[in-house]
Each structure stands twice: as structure tokens, then as C-alpha cells.
Image (cartoon, rainbow, N blue to C red; front, side, top):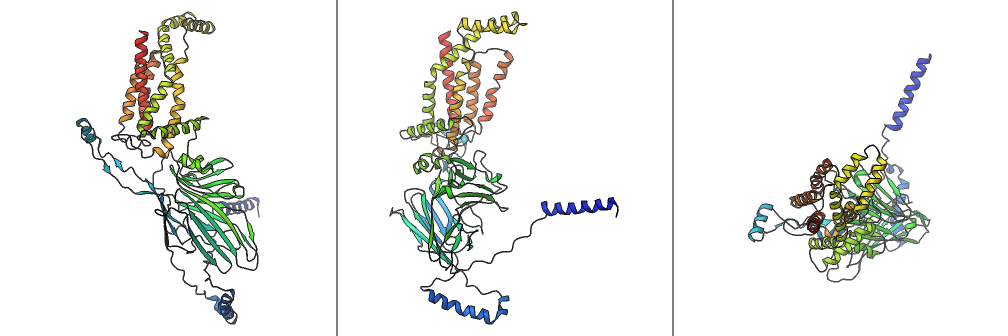
Length: 568
């Protein structure tokens, strides 16, 4: 065999080997037989008596083993409704898990929105009241699953001696819980025995006053040998790829690990992500809402985040492996929070849940500025039942605080405009000597007591406030669907008719025209384009933020008029 033939064979084998490793799909694992429920009886003797005939039959007729044994048909799952003043939850005996969770105080859409701006403005001019168009009052649903998907809060033991399906049907000790009238803590207990080996109890305790739920899981070993268990408490969420995703929202798995927030957008999950231990809490978040599981011992808990081909996102809290001795039980406790990302409410929990509110910024310290602005706006809202008016008051107060700096800035720009001919003369005189030009220019500034940087001072100060308020308006649930007036029925959303951004752009243009021109005339012309750029940027900004910037422009124009008259 020549060298070419040997080389061809070797290359062929290499290609086949590479194909098997990188391209060939692994064979599908065999489906495990469904776990059948063993009927609970009052005595071990009765259980043994019932199992003995089946064992004898299997020994005397081994050929019958080729035929599948007829399993007792499992009872169909049923729903248990749990209702408080804050939410309506529906639990299912399938998985002893959560089938639905609707928040009573939050709707999917604004319930009062203007139908058409033209009749609205006409009625406003004529003094007539424009009737608001009533939209759907459908409540926010925090459980999103498709048919045949497991439900959130299902319990599994994938690395244990006894495997338990997330779809196993449990028994429940109640048909309904209603805490709207009797405001006392109530419990819902699910239980099931699997193959006479292990008994699982899931005990949910509901607090009628908030969104917190306590879950205790008891695992009992019914055998005469030790059982190892590694429990997983799971949250499942279907993410519809056809639905538009808010670009400002990091919708997907979230966890607080080692005092640091870890979040992943559902669309970005391509491989399994495991974090921990030291998991304080983890679950699934949306822009304004979240469902998180809080383990009893964070130092022993890790979390896995994944997404399958059917767009089901799984968030699995994994406890450490433990051994249950014969005839004994083990227990695990969790706290659950399923509700709004209200900073004040989450802060009261004392579990760092408030870190889920997305006030983070690329500028250090602005997170606390956002929180401070939110607290102040909420304080004003106690006395003024309109967040839009509260934003106006905040804008006026900020302008009053920075009024002296604004005066210094405008005076400096006026003086800069006056000495501009002298600066041009210096540039002509020292055009070949940049060092002398710089010295002469600084001497001129000193002579006229002008600081060229003071003109930028108000803008530089406004930027942190702007970013802080931007985060507040965008992520604070208190401002969600909060109306201002007329057509603006949601301060956290964009102006639906783009009226305020256009007016804001016009005021920006007026302010720019009034600003004394300093330096290159071409640069001044370019600056007049900035209001157009700002207008396009602000089109999709929250209406509350546009109102802030619009009013700030109007106040700045008034301040410039005042300074110009004073210096005239």
C-alpha cells in the first residue's frame, strides 16, 4: 500500500471521527417508566399482605414478566384556589405546584387611555371633559406555562435514590383557601407516598398581608435502608419568542449570589448556567415583577439556569446531598416572594430582595441617587396624588438649588462673548507660537475674571440628576401606569403622540439660540442641530423624564432672559 493510500485512509477516519464528536446527535436516552403511586394504608401488615400475592404470581409465572403490569390509573389533577387581598393563586395537585398567580392591584394595561388626541384637545379648549376609553382590566399573571409543561415550584430529586417526576399527582388537605375575610395565616398541605419507599409532604403557609409564602418540604424514609436525597425546587417559565421584549427589561432568570446580582436575559441563554453556592435567593424576573425562592441555608445552595428547545426556562435551586436514616424524616424550608418589585416593600423583607430593582448605572453612586429621588417623589405623592405634579415640583426644587451655578455660567458665557474679538486678535498675533498664545489667553481670562469651563457647569451637574431620574422613572413600579393629565396616562411609558418630546425639542432650540456663541461660528451652527438630535432621542423616553427636561428647559430660558436683562 503506497503512502497516498495510507494518507487517504487516515484522513477518512479522521473526518468520520470528527463528525461523530462534533456533528452526530447522541442517541436519545430511554424514557424512564412513570413512577406509580402506592396506596397508603393504616398498617405495614396490610401493605405486605397486598404485595405478597403479586410477588408469588411473578415467581410462579416468570413468562408474564414480558408483559407490562397493569398500573392503577392515577387520579386526574385538581386545582386549589388560594385568595388574599393581594393575589389569587391557583395550585394544582399535579406536582403540588403553582398553576396561576394573579396580582389584584396590577393590570396588564392602563385602564384609562385617550382614544384620539384631536377630539381630546378640542374638548380641552372648549372646556368639555373627554371621556376616557376603558381598556381591558386583565390582571397581571406571574405564571407562564404551556400545555404539558411542569408547573413552577415543582419538586424533583434527579440525583437521589428515588426519582420523583415533576408531574406526580399529590393529595391535598383542602379544596380552597380564602383569606380575604378571615385575615389569618392558613396552610395548604400536599402529600404523596412513592412506591412505599418515600413520602413527600409540601406545606405552604400563606400570609394574608403580603406576597410572602413559606414552604416546608418533609421527606420521610419508609424503608429499612438509608436513602440519599438531593432536592431541586424549580421555577419554570415559558418565554414566547414571538412576543416583543422590552429593550429596557432584563426578563429572565435572576439570582443574588455572594452579595452580587446575577441576571440573564432569556434570549441570551444558550447553555446551562450554574452559580453558587452562597445563593441568597433566585428565580425569574420581569421588568416590574418577580418570583424568587429564598433557601434556608444559602451557603449550601446553588442554582442552575437553562432553556430548552421549546423555550422553557428552568431555574433550579439545588440543596446539598443528605442521607435520611431508615424510618426517619428530613425537612427543608424555603421562603417565596411572588409579587411586585416595589423597592420599599422589598427592603422591608431584609433579604436584599431590593437589589432586584434595576437602579444600577455605569456611573458609581447614581444608584443611591435614583433611590433618593424615588423616596422623595413618593414623599411628595403622599400630599399630591399625582406623580407628574410631584416630578414638576422636584424639577423646580432642583432648579432653585442650582440657580446660583446657572447664574455664574450664563454670566461667564456673556463675558466670553464680549472678549471673543480679543481672543481672535491673540490667535492672529501668536499663530506661530502656541505657548505664548496659551499664556496670553489665560492672562486675558484672568483680567476679565472669566472661567471658560464654568459655561459647562450646569450641564455637567444636570447629567447625574438626569440619569438618576431616568432609572427611577424607568424601573420604579410606583410610577408604572401612573397618569399625569390628558393623553399622558403612564409616566413610565413614552408619550403616545410625541407631543411633549416635540415641545421639548422646540424649547431646546430656543435655549440654544439664546446661548451666547463662543468660538468657531461653524461650531455654533452645529450646536443648533443638537435640539433635533435630542428630540429624536427623547421620543421613546418615559413621559415623566421628558416632562422633567421640558420644564427644566423652560426654567433655563427664563433664567437666561433674567441674566441678559441684568447684564444689559
